[in-house]
Length: 420
Ligand code: 2M8
Image (cartoon, rainbow, N blue to C red; front, side, top):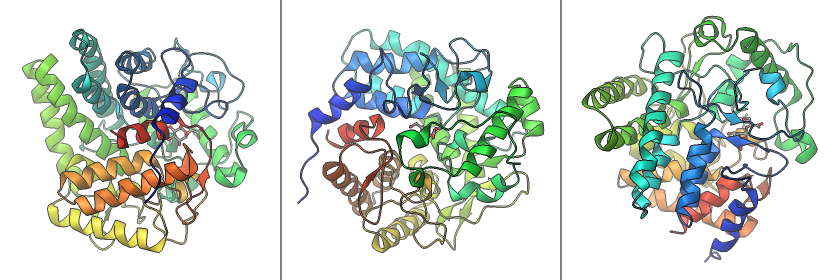
């Protein structure tokens, strides 16, 4: 029997990371508002402070661009603790923001916050946020799937949220490690370099930022010139799930035309996502849009179509068995890279460690298929890791050690959601 999660301590993490209506992922290492972190964090706030949950979503939307993009970082206040800052991004937006997006968890969080709300003003609060979410889903379809295939692409590994996943190795190797901006990494001043991406990764990350900045962050020009273009499983699965929640919200706040538009995107993406299944590996795999080939990799992102109800029941059962096999090889699930893959590194960021937010989505997906044994095992692993090690950014699946930044907001949010 593991000790329970300390709920007050989880709340205290969010309170300590609150910078006035938005929550930083953790102090020093990430001193701004991050897109998908904030969506999870809003759901966490909603468990004890409804008003604060709304503010989190509203403050993220302060950074939304006119074309609908919700940037991956909103630089509300200056800080020297992070690289690359607004000067490197050069987006000239006000408030300053990055120029790429992140997994669109926003509409999912909006629905959760609204459904938990007791305040009579909640619908008035949700209505403009619904419009913001609709605009952002349109941006994904227009800017990141201009050919209308049904699958959106990421143009930068940071856009996936899973920055150094082995899923990008092949495609990323084609990006020249030759930025014009001088690299001044700050992350390794805050946490050990062995838990972070390599310097060579940063040279390529910043090369892409320099390239897109020179193109004025124009989506059409970026699409044409991008040397890195991958139809990521996580982005598409999360967007597909978010569209389902948006469709529900459109029933409350939208028009018939909105509903038809959203439903059409859902139908098209369902078919396209089905084409990413690798039956031999029992995971979904990304497609490299430069080569046209599926990337033969097994990562935890490959299970996320469960969260959107994409797989057949038989596929879902096979994935549940595969997750069990991974958990059997290491001590704690779900590792971000298959522990049977030679590229598995249990301490290096998105190349092996367990992430609470990913676990929460996979578990919710399995539960929706009635695969409750699998869902319960993942949830109890997540609880046990947090109870033993605190609110770490991520955990070593072989030892359970908490790694990366400490007092981490989205881990605290997941702890609160698991303790309801
Ligand atoms: C990590 O990514 C940022 C870049 O966005 C970084 O390493 O500098 C990722 O884990 C990402 O998914 C997360 O949103 C962000 C803040 O927690 O940190």
